[in-house]
Image (cartoon, rainbow, N blue to C red; front, top):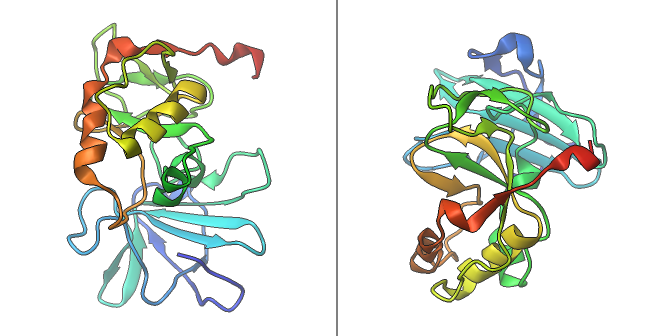
Amino acid sequence: NFVDAATPRRQVSIKGRPQDSFPGPYPITDPAYVENMPTYHFDMHYLGVDAASGEVWELLSLRSWFGRLEADSGAHYLLGSNDYPHGSSIAVDMPLLPGVITYDEVAAGSVDHVVLAGIERSAPRWVWPARNSDGRSADPDAPPQGAWMRLRSDADVSKLGPQARVVAAGLQRYGLILSDTGGGFGLRGTPDGRWNDEDLATLSNLHAGDFEVVDPSGIV
């Protein structure tokens, strides 16, 4: 949702992590496009982006309850800053928007940033750049939230479709960061009717052994 100074600012009641969230108010568009509309399941993120000021507002599980806006958590940050957000809308307390794949960048042929990913089992601990974890696995081999992984340069991408190959090239150069716990293994992407779901499904030909762990200590 693109917002500007004229977008109405609304107070949102934070129900999940009020002490850790940006208190608001939040610029809410009308209509407000929420993740997984119209079924309203999964994380139901709302993102408001002000291109002029470089500000971003994020809300997790935004919903309207008898005319009152509620969410589980919320965040605000500046795109031009390396500072962590005030608040968060994802488990690792990092900004969501910079780690999301868009159709337009794939159509242009390049994903030039790290991608946020979810995994089925993760440890209840975290490493930089994460600041939190929703992991619950007691498996000693379960990775921590914030783990940075890169698709190996020799990974077999011959079975990937055209869109999937662009994503894979980005994963080979910039990698992914584990940022959430969920079913299976998935990458963050924007909802867009132009995606070819059958093409993207070919990413399932990649396996855990195709990735290597990145040591970020040289840039911390």
